Length: 154
Image (cartoon, rainbow, N blue to C red):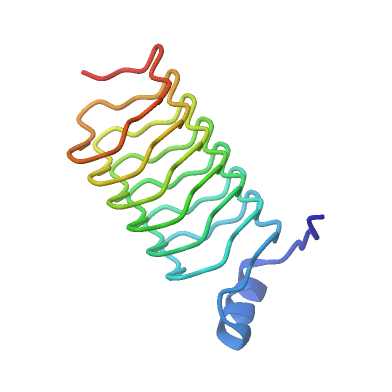
């Protein structure tokens, strides 16, 4: 069961300052978290739909099963983040750093991954149907059973 919390950016910053980054199941939809330090944050099952996470640092964050539909993660640092089963449909990941990220079974349909760095990322069974992967860096990425139908690769 997901308990939803609706908070202002100031309240989220206060929670992080006082209690750490335990934001599991929080409702942060539509919020601006631009440039925020969310290193090692627990955002498992959080609702981040339409959230602005441009340039946010989500290194080593737990985003398993999080809803990031239509979220803006352009330039975000998601190195080694756990995004297993995350919903990233139509998300903007332009220039995002996803090196070593776990994206197994993630829904990336229609996502913009232009110039995203996916080196060593685990994309097994991810749905990238219709995603924009132009100039994405995929060296060493695990692409086993990935759905790339209608994806833009060049």
